[in-house]
Length: 243
Image (cartoon, rainbow, N blue to C red; front, side, top):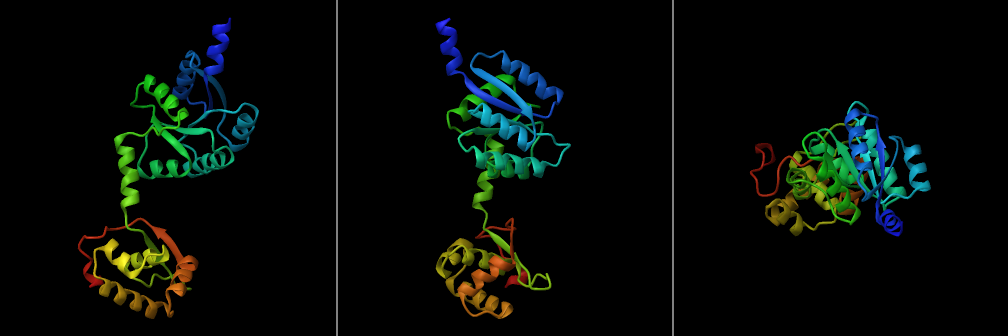
């Protein structure tokens, strides 16, 4: 009796936000038979998850993603749960994934992504245990997506009051780096260009936007800019129209 009580107290509490898909239901049934976990479930909606976590704090919250429903809304729900309960590790349970989903999931607070279509059940148990211990669960491909993201040169699409794009892609990169607080020398190093070339870009940008200082440029970027995925990295050949 004492041993059973000790095992129960040491079990990892797991809340599974489930969309009632058959495959997810089978996994839940299998997890319930594992003594190292204490499993509870709730529907995949913000209200139900918040109520469940409030009543029974979970060390790990597993979101069973439903690709037939708006994925962005489900990511927003996970983000809200993460902000409300940051101490609970979040795992996204998916049938498939792509780069955008991986990036969105980790940005929304996920500590792991588990693909149920091509990974054995025992690895799901290991995934839950790892994230409960504060680790990250991601395969090589998912880590590559994240590393590619942080190695990209940032870029902003800068529009005028009529919504028209008025800068070249390279000029938009310069604006993004200046907006992040980089000096001309640092911007030059980031883009593998000379500092003189960056100065020319900055003055050309000033002229196009009708401004005269870096402070004005940062404010313009905040008010008129939208983040873009980089189209090339520093050191690669510049497009012909940017020469």
